[in-house]
Length: 456
Image (cartoon, rainbow, N blue to C red; front, side):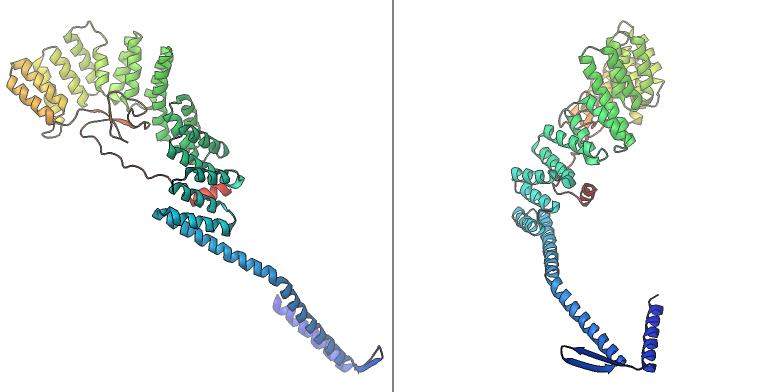
């Protein structure tokens, strides 16, 4: 489009020049006693030159007028580059654990960038690294006061509250962030974790339901955690005297996690306490298909305390038939056979359990049962002593072990009695898992994704 326009302008100029050349004329100008006589062509050229000179003068004047503004713009750009360089140095100092250099970089960045959120966040992180909690909170409060950086400030204050152990304040901060941004992952996780740690089971159940609905928490994890919460709600409800509701809550938990024995044990024990032995029997038989457990076998054997040993053996055999390949089935039948003094039956099932056990590593329970069998059937104290000696070095019996701190617990709880972690007690056999490494303290400095979220 530009080429045709230029051609048109050239054609117009040539046509005008041709017209003037073909029609010469004289021009006379008289002004203030001055008289100028010239041709039309010369006058046209003079006018064009004058316009060109005036255009150049205008350009020079405009450049001079714009010079201060351009200088200020270049100065701001230099300050901005220097400020971000100071931020980069501050981040490097934080990573290197140098609080003094981080403070200097933060002060320089604040002065150069006029307290932008990154500079405030760096100042807060530097103060926290230096152990100055008050200064860190003051900087973070400055972020909270700005609507565009409120979430950044709330997260920083939340992390600082968690670091100092103020869980109530941390929960309040996480709730504020959650109300501002319901889908914010760290806020949802923080609210849920603190409600669980503080034993606020009903609030945690509602939070978990909302998080699962918004897909902030994966469905599988939500299922397990909801089951654990329902078990604790069952305990709380029982303490308040409502056993029926306690049984209903335990039943809901068992339906959510049929692979776990703890909810079934809870439901069955409540039913036994209420005298509903038939319902308890059905619960245990259903649980044995998916989660055989020594506590379930104990409860089942005690449903009829007046039953003869042979009758108990028949009942346990019927229970074991629902999951005949499980180790707990063999052990339960062997124990019932020992009580009934049916040594051959006991030896058969213990032999099957020993065959299924790792080579040269039967569990302590099996060693103790074999010692009991040898002494009861044959009166062979020497053989019994050998089995007891093996039990000393045998792998531990299955028990509840916290996957976070490796502490053991006799009974299942949603919170580890030792470290307070939620839903970390697992029924394990063999050696305890190694201690989990301590997590590094979370930085107060927000990540780039946090900054992007805060600016939205």
